[in-house]
Length: 197
Image 1 (spheres, rainbow, N blue to C red):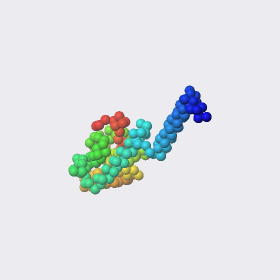
Image 2 (image 1 turned 90 degrees about the vertical axis):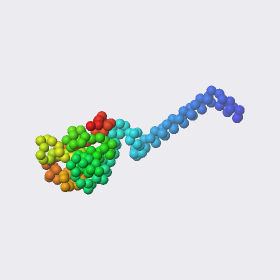
Image 3 (image 1 turned 60 degrees about the vertical axis):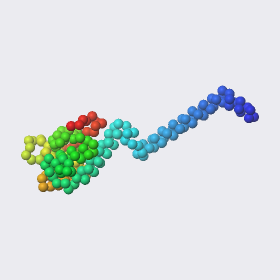
Image 4 (image 1 turned 180 degrees about the vertical axis):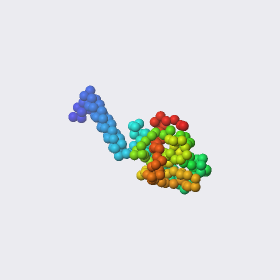
């Protein structure tokens, strides 16, 4: 009996059976790998680099916004200084925004108007943490943006208001800020085709 099994295994029929078994095992392993990868994606066990390009951009923007808000909170209490653009010199409004974004790896222009021109326009309803908020205040030609803050969520911003005040968190829904509203901005990420200012 054993001699017959050995002869069968060495025959063409036996070799074909081994090939079919090996192919079946390989197919099962590939299906298992697919299931594991699918479950990982479903439950968030996936890195941004493994996401499709449109989801990579969303993940990157969310991470950038969180980092920007964290950095802005770290400057609360710093005194307003006209022309200031670092913790060493303190901050004016656009200097705060430029410095925070630079620490997060994004280069922005220096003035509030330049930052407004450089960012993508978004509505107040679409603002998310890390977006920029712009205002037109006093003594400039009409439609000139003169103030900028960093939106942190829930209708609030962090900004460096004016001489004699400090970097602080404040609502953008007060009558004063609503009356001076110029628009919301979203920083264009390098993957969205933006270039350094």
